[in-house]
Each structure stands twice: as structure tokens, then as C-alpha cells.
Length: 182
Image (tube, rainbow, N blue to C red):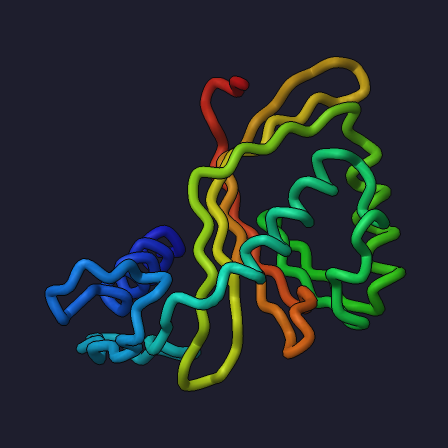
């Protein structure tokens, strides 16, 4: 069901950004911000009115991912809001002040000797009716634990950014790669 939601979300984003004027103007410079309403047989709890947003929050998210790979979450702690809420793929949820949350995340990261991420796609979006900015990222993470065991996971994360461009909410989803590979 979650996969269907994200496929539908991606299709919605693409549909919302479709160039209806027939010009060769790129989406990044397009002034067309109209979107078609989705005729859904399901109630949409949050929003179905998204538009492609500025790249800033996607770039912030890529920096956060790179800090994770490098093993130093304090390098850009200012990219996180004063309070953060995280929903992890394993079902665990955490919320609290930035310093506490980053300390817990750093402890989890320190369990790995090496982390290498790759990015398949990243999209900055804005919920027009909620006036909230998000960045969606798909990729793969290859972890090497302290004993040298390698494991990998396909990953999808949805991050929300506050008015100051700081991350304040994360939804994370994983799918195992089989067999684990780099």
C-alpha cells in the first residue's frame, strides 16, 4: 500500500508539473503553476495538490545524507529544526530537541564502520494547499558493520522543511535488496 502511495505521489508530482502550454520552457523556469485536481476514490488525508519546488531543500537533504555517510551528523546540525519528529522504516518513532535527536542518530550511525549511499532520484515539492515544503528522495544505502558484514537497503525518505529551511519531520521506508550488494 505504501508503494502505491509513493508511486501515486510521484505520478501526481509529474502530472502537476506537466507543461500544458506546448512551449519548450523547462520546468525549473516555467511560470505555469496550475495543476489538475485528482479524482480519487479514496479520501486524501494530507494533500493532493503538490508542485515542484525550489531545489534548496533537496540540496539540504543531500547534505544531510552526505553527513550520514561521512559519520558526522554535527557537521551541519543547523540544517535541523530545534525540534524534530522522525518515523523510521522499522516502525520506531522519535521526537525531541535537535541536540538529543542528533546524539541518538549519531550513536546509531557509529554502529556502522562505513556507509555508502547512492541517490536514484530527489524531488523538492510544495504542498500548495498546506503551504509546506518537502523533499522526496529514493536511493540505496550500503552499510558495513564493525565486523565487516555488508548489508544494503533500498530507501525512500520524505522530509519536511520549516519556514527557515530546516528539516523538522522525516518519514522513512526501506525495501531489502536481495542479495545485499554494493
